[in-house]
Length: 500
View 1 (spheres, rainbow, N blue to C red):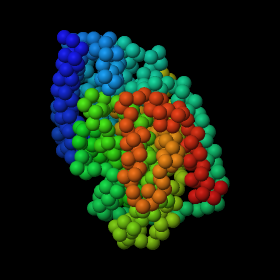
View 2: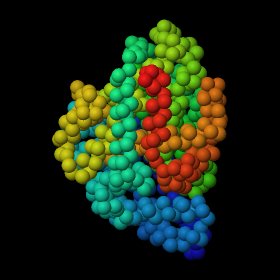
View 3: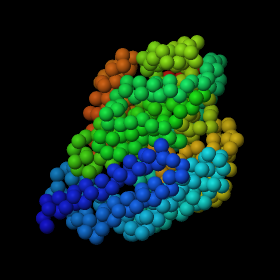
View 4: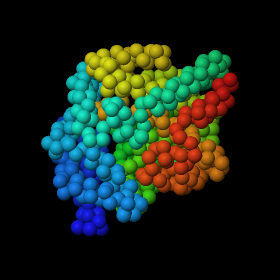
């Protein structure tokens, strides 16, 4: 076969594998949203079977031969096919020594781990999840050992899976600067005499009203319901099922209305990113190349830079009063704005304010390094979690549900959490450029979100599947990742709120 014929054959195989993964995505979404309790394990087995069939297709001798041959002649390919084959070759080196039987075992471990995490969180009992977490840790180490392109440091491999090119050496420096800056801001806030009213934050708001607000916010921000849906799950997430199917979930709390509001805005940011990937990225099978840090930059941009801004509060306040006047009618626009931005150490990462949020991520980053470097035993993980929360945030969980079991991420491995903090810094970097080119505050206050989305499409979304994270952020801003501008943003915003 010549190069053109090999590429055609490769595309045919990838097209078929993607149909399996499409089905996996649908069943997994059902599993995490509306699946009956007693059906979850069976659904998990169907997911594992279909995933394994796709794995067989994309790790067969014929498929791997095509990958190697096309990689060796990649300079003859068009630019996007060259990007595609370089990514596929990198993945080939990562998984070539994994057999279909071992891949099925892996899928079963992760599925079982997720289901046990659900049970453990409900029971607020780490022991229910303990053995599954130990299995995941050993599996992570085993799969790293099988890689042809593994890095010397175990955790660096996992960071690279989430954020290509990122190493602990760089992240240690990044988090060191970020942590110092956050603690300095917190110290200024703690000395402030300004008191923010927050008595209304735990008032009960009927869920059906929250559902109406959720749809309003998503449509306002530019999420397309013709290409997505909103459901409820234990832990909010976004699922990129197919080109025209980016699904979101939230979790409603009757006595925490802001939790859902910001969950929806955050996940909606992921969905908007997914719904606006380029057509040619799907055509060339590179649509799954956006890194977690890139994605979190957009979701946290919508959640915080837009969602917690004075302009956005002014925009949504009339709707807020229309829906919640009975429960929150005595809350002024300024009081709502300040309450959305109150800085107060809390136990739950997803509910944390912009300033303390980074410390939640740093705790997880430090623990993941300990876990992957064998510096902590599985049985000691809850105690270490609680100790770091006490040390960094001055608070301590009263149970495992609000402690080590609050996030589902470790049921499927490690390396994701740093992406949230990187995302905050990425968006602080590119928002500076955005504000030079468009009237950002004016667009938000007028509800002209399409202006913002179009800028993101042209500058942030367009090459995300093609570039490495460093190439991507340098293309947008001319600089590599730094927390400098994020800390400047926080200082400016919170000095106005807390009058320091």
